[in-house]
Image (cartoon, rainbow, N blue to C red; front, side, top):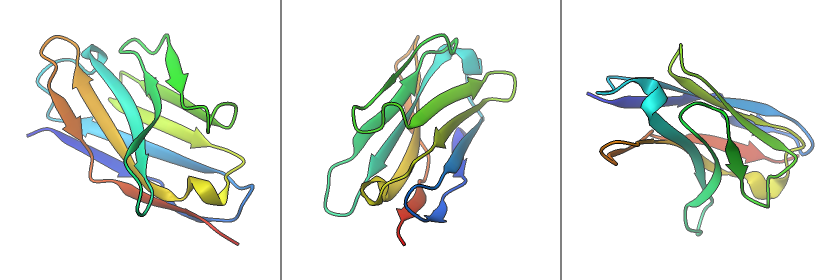
Length: 120
C-alpha cells in the first residue's frame, strides 16, 4: 500500500520558516521514477501547485507566489521530498499536500496533508 506521509506543519509568525517533509513507502517502482510535487489548499480556495521536482532532482519549478522563498528538494535514497519555506506570509496559510506521479504508468498518489498557519 502506497503511503505519502507529510510532517513539519504548524503555526509560525510572519517572516518565519518551516520545513515540510514527505516520506514515501510502498511504492511499486523506485522512488527516482516519481515526479514529486507540493500542493496547497487554503480555505475556500482551489488546490494549487506550489512546487515540483523531477525524478532525478535535477530540475524544479515554483509557483510565482513562492519563488525565492520556498525550496523543494528530494533524497532518493531515503524516499523523501522536502519543502523549505522561508519568509512566510499569512497568505501561505493552507493545508500542504505531497503528491507523487510515476513517470512510466502515470499513477498518482496524495498524502493526507499537513496544516501550515502563518499568523501573529
